[in-house]
Length: 88
Image 1 (cartoon, rainbow, N blue to C red):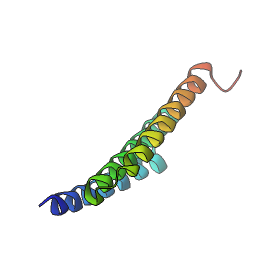
Image 2 (image 1 turned 45 degrees about the vertical axis):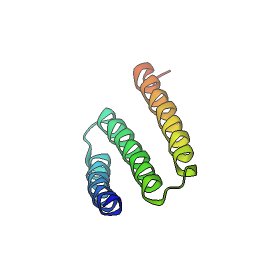
Image 3 (image 1 turned 60 degrees about the vertical axis):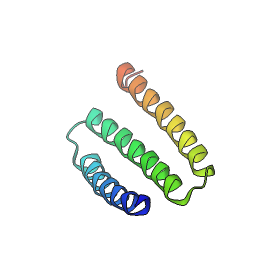
Image 4 (image 1 turned 90 degrees about the vertical axis):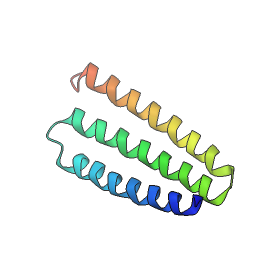
């Protein structure tokens, strides 16, 4: 039952990732694209976590934590850039 749930979760996450990339490409403003990129990174972390549950391999959870950390730092960097503006 866990494998079926993990497979369904992965399918839903892949569909959501497709919509996030669509927003990343079509986003009218730069903040929309930053939010879409953050969402895509969060969905990727979720996919890694579901894969860890499905396989039972703990190393995937460490990879997910590192990916989440880099995503957070990247989002903070983008927000700092948007707040300062491209003029500085």
